[in-house]
Image 1: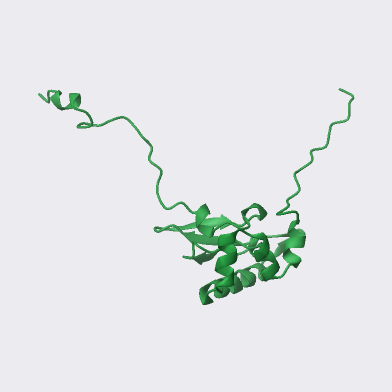
Image 2: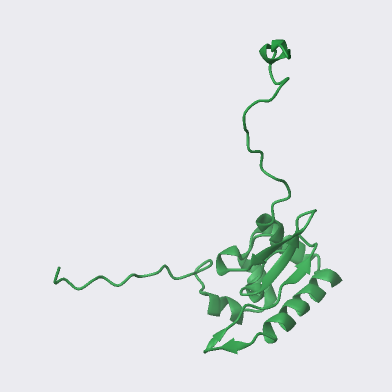
Length: 147
């Protein structure tokens, strides 16, 4: 047991060969060249006024975060209905409230989410949990005497 314990090494994030700092230094057009064709096409057709306004709100929430013991707290949640918005590197570290059709699901944007849609992290249905069958579920359950 005198062996020195091996230090854990964590996987370093990279997206198409660039780390997060490299992605943040790219302008929006260079960033879009790294994403899939659907995201590039959407960007080429122009960002909507709502998307620009939402990014501005995310920047404002990030800038308003407080530092406690040398560590930044999580920013305030910014709600949105735009499930079809592509996550870009600028959004990493933000907290988004994505509407699921009934309520807002809190999504903390992480580097691995770049290029995906906000809606992918907010499920719109309640998964079915199949339990025991009730009365009327099968033909044989009809003939149970009720007394």
